[in-house]
Image 1 (cartoon, rainbow, N blue to C red):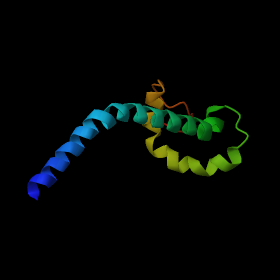
Image 2 (cartoon, rainbow, N blue to C red; image 1 turned 90 degrees about the vertical axis):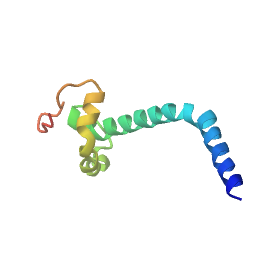
Image 3 (tube, rainbow, N blue to C red; image 1 turned 90 degrees about the horizontal axis):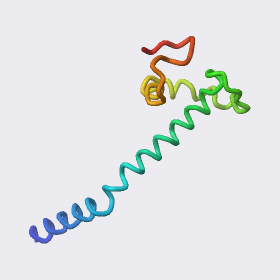
Length: 88
């Protein structure tokens, strides 16, 4: 019974390496782009971009500030674009 279980796990790892692994990077990249767009929409008022939904997105700001530094570096900004917030 142990040999069958071991073979099953080997087969699952092979399947994972063959079919799933090549798409993980693409899925992560797509997820990161969606998160960046969401962050831009939420923080647009602070960045000077008019946002008609700012009343609703204002309460989400504290949740997005945790990884703000990584975001603005990924967007190609050396320093924080917000005047009141210095993270670097």
